[in-house]
Amino acid sequence: MKSDPDPQLMGLIQGWITAKSQNHPVPLIGIGGSQASGKSTLAKAAAKAFGAVSLSLDDVYRTKAERLAMARAVHPLFAVRGAPGSHDLSLLEEVVKTLSQAGPKDYTALPTFDKLADDRLPRAEWPVFEGRPSAILIEGWCMGAGSIAAEALVRPVNSLEAEHDPQGVWRRHWNTVLADSYQHLFAQLDALLFLRAPDFGVVLDWRCEQEAGLLGMAPSDLPPERRQALSQFVAHYQRLTQHMLKGGVAATAIAALGANRQLTSISE
Image (cartoon, rainbow, N blue to C red):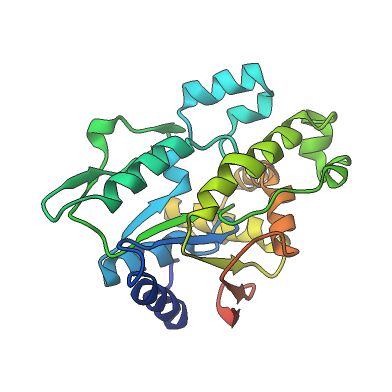
């Protein structure tokens, strides 16, 4: 069940919008954090409260056809959305540019991804934003992540990597992409908030709670086979999430969360 965003985090974002807009007509603010850490809820609430627009890395995943082509050309694991390289950053930057230059009567279509269909919706079905936003908020699980040292990629971090990426082709490729086009995106941010989970162990529980909510049931009623499938899915995110939790993220502020997702502290 979703809770309201913490007032301190809302106030932090509001302060950034006010301060950054003095030098940047439309501030670009990132929100990063593990799966189900509350990024989307916070970004959407802040956008509504402050006249901003919320964009998600989840909504610019490459289409299913594009990811299948990448899976054939690079590595089969790229058929699964999530890792750096599975996002269409050119599309995101195009939308950011359009919003930044929009006039009061302009309409900007916002990309939308259908997770049930595992594909991006047709452009005709995208929602639109009217006018010029006070800020552009981009939330995503790997926002602000730095690349990982090559020697740290050698050993598999979980059974998924051991079984499906024993030679490290997949993880080396997404790490190379992360070091390139993703850093270009992050460099454009005026500020970045990182929602830091207490450890990677809570991420699966959070993701299962989120899934149960979508299905309209209590987390304890989530079928065991669904939890196992989510465990396999979350494994794709483990290496980079742990890297970020250990400090591998360039953030303006870090919001430490407890196991219940409640804010425990903010460091700037």
